[in-house]
Structures are given as C-alpha cells and as structure tokens.
Length: 194
Picture 1 (cartoon, one colour):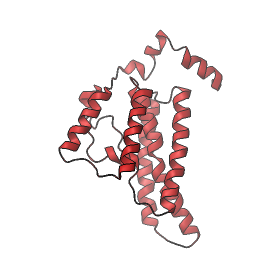
Picture 2 (cartoon, one colour; picture 1 turned 180 degrees about the horizontal axis):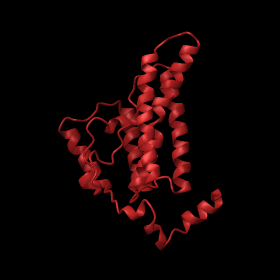
Picture 3 (cartoon, helix red, strand yellow; picture 1 turned 60 degrees about the vertical axis):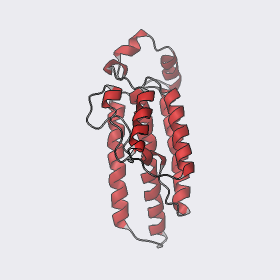
Picture 4 (cartoon, one colour; picture 1 turned 135 degrees about the vertical axis):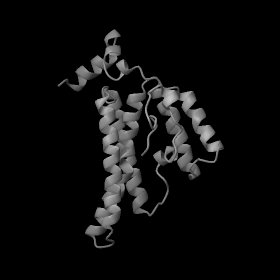
C-alpha cells in the first residue's frame, strides 16, 4: 500500500500510463454542457423537482464546481457524488437513534427504510470504487471531507426539524439519460440517484 505522499507523487506525475488504468481505459466521456442541457430540457418539460431557493443555489453552485474539478473524469465525479449522497440517510438514521435512545420517538420502520436507501447508495459507491473512481488521493480527500461537512449540515437540519430536500434529490426522479451524453451504454445513466 502506498503512503499518501507516494499517492500524491503518482497522482501528480500521471503520464501516458494513466490511460491504461481504470477508469481512464474505459474511454467514458461526459459532456458537462450536454448534461446541463438535458437537465434544462427535463425542467422545461415539467419534470423538475421543486426545491427551496437556497437548496437550488447550493446545487447549482456545487454542479459548477464539480464541472471544473472533475472535468473529463466521470467515474471520479460519480464516486464523489455517491460518497456524499450517502450522508443524508446516515444523518437521519443517526438522529432516529438519538431520539429512540432518549425515548422521544420510536420509528423502526423509518430506520429500516433509510437503512435500505443507504445500502443502495453503498452499492453505487462500491461500483464506482471498482471502476477506479477513488484512485486519486485528492479525490478521496475532497470526497471524505465534503461528506463529513454534508453529514453535519444534515444532522443539524434534522435536529431542527427541517424537511428540506437534500441537494442530490434535485436530480432524482427521472434523471436525464446520460447514456448518449456519457457514451457509457448504461441503462439508467451516470447521474446520481441518491
């Protein structure tokens, strides 16, 4: 196993051989512009998900940052999204455990539903990891820290009774098919479902 410094050096010095490793060798491409156009078409057709303006602004800003940071690296991008997308379920179940421990509320059915949703996200994450989405230490660093911050935000939101949607729900529902956009030949596209 490489140390973080060896990983950093390898990441910085990725040369010609990087194209022979997963995920680069898969030849997947993602056009940020095409995904954004597909999202606009979906919303124009009335399939958008209503969101609070603050949630929408965070979502749009986050997408713009991801478009820059993960440009040309769709697997790493979706590994990051799946890492962060698990946090609302984890935060909600954490708060349910707290409420149950204090005897404030008993809702085992809700815990079971959110555990199943998190279990689903875990498998999305495992797929992205098996495709090499977490190969760069900088992506892992960013993903883990963003997940921790998002977890804290969601715990705070649940604790104060917020029913706002989490940011990743904005592309849930019927995500635009990115198969033609990404050239991945997948059934449901590469857009996050969580």
